[in-house]
Image (tube, rainbow, N blue to C red; front, side, top):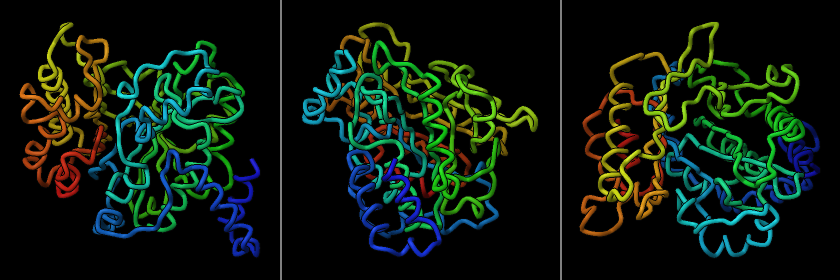
Length: 382
């Protein structure tokens, strides 16, 4: 808590704001955030400032936003799993191999610098039920970097890149421990993080609507894939952003329609077909084809229908129950054999996206977004 308080002071316009103590406090928080956010460094380049080319009047729902699925998993290797075993064991779970969970290989700050603007982050209690940290299912991703720490990484990056806006999707991860609970105490802790003085400054305070780019520059659009159903409604009412209740998000859905603003009849169109329902024993190329087909079908819909609505497509998937298992990396990039000579979903998407030049595709979330190298450039050139 002391870290957040001091760093919030560092971000305020007060005599304390320019003091060495405030700078030291911020540096400490960024160092703690590094296992998830990555070591902080200020870089500039075309990809890190690509939103500069768009007028302030541009509606966010009209923009093409590249994102990453399970963004915090980038550093989850065998070495990190082994190092975290003592902490993870407190959750009383057996954690499968890291390749089951790893969906990225570059840090959040690298993603930002390379043009990524939408992030999928999953949180839950640490094993002592005192802080909120990041998980992918049973995989605890860092015992040091808290949700609050990582948010300060985004705040600092936006200060350094004021032309940009970021979309943060936060989702409660329910499968971290047999005894995990999305209880009132956890929900209140999350609420307090998202309504702190620093959060109020950096999160766009609009509710249930996406506005114009000019109003969003230097700020975060919150995508709330969680409910605060164990605490009074007033706490939910105090939160900014768009609410995508887990109760309304169709599991493994290829064509989800989710109303996030009933008063104005605003609907999000979502594809989240994260596990192709291929027959058991299906080969990698068949799983890749099923996922690719679902992805491009939804992107086609985004280019042709509901031009003023939010479209959100996940190009990511896995099929670990299959024999042999199809890990996230195989789905995204292929298995490196003659059976997937072209690669995975990412490689297939490059020529498809080149054919969508000048069209709105919306938010698209990738696994291993940096491969092939032309994927994000192709996306940003739409």
